[in-house]
Length: 198
Image 1 (tube, rainbow, N blue to C red):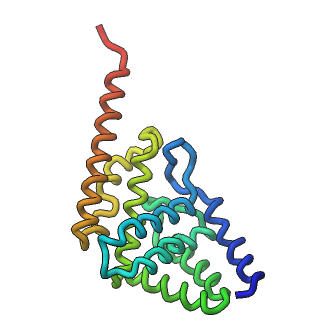
Image 2: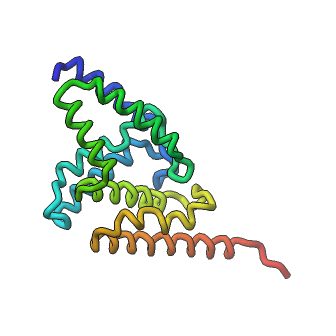
Image 3: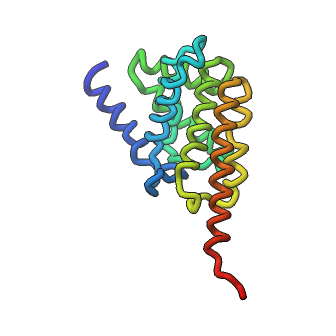
């Protein structure tokens, strides 16, 4: 790859650092799409021993590129994202990937097709980690940043994606316990801070 081609790709990909997601970090600032993708990739690396028959290097690459379409559309929360949004994002992404130099063009095209088909262990693992990372990040954020619909969504989000793996089901259960504890503690705090009526 020519240096100029690499710089063009990196300049476009920098958009993932600029676009924020519908979630705060533990310090109260908006999380970037790039930060989310990085931690999905980190999760894959950390779980390689749990999935010995899965090509973790491929999962890491999938994790790093899975939200590249959001360079062009920004992040749209799952509960607002429509099929029309998905088609528009995919069209913009495909147009950009189609202009990349080889062999990156073919590699990315094949990986995006594999992730969309959701038939391989690698695609299923990446999708599951994508959902779990989002739930973890919400748990790390202040509960005051949650929308009312997210109290229930936190417990449902990603459940079907982890169904194929006993390990991921146990991880989701652990995260759900954390979510429930956070909700209980928040409710107790609100009750404790309410003025007494005499």
